[in-house]
Length: 91
Image 1 (cartoon, rainbow, N blue to C red):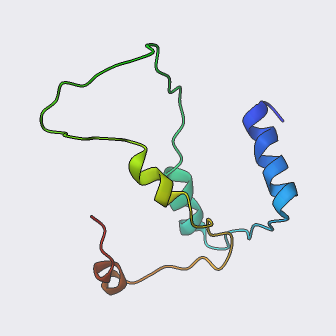
Image 2: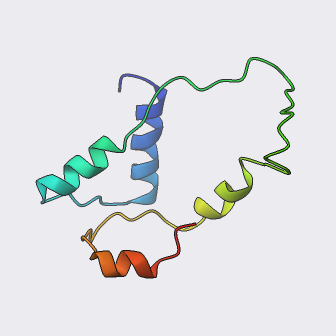
């Protein structure tokens, strides 16, 4: 491990006994790899207030509670058609 996030990832996989499937399609691998974002994220003040009237009652953690509740996919990855995408409500 190079850092503690890598150690935490390995520990989580070991404790949950999850077996991750490998991507067999190169395009699917590239799609996931291009979606990876990283960088430093920090707040240096104890309290900050946004005076933006365009974003009333904005709470960045409100939607994350639901988004992180279902288990993440670990196998059976497949492409879906544009018709299936249009059936899902994105926003």
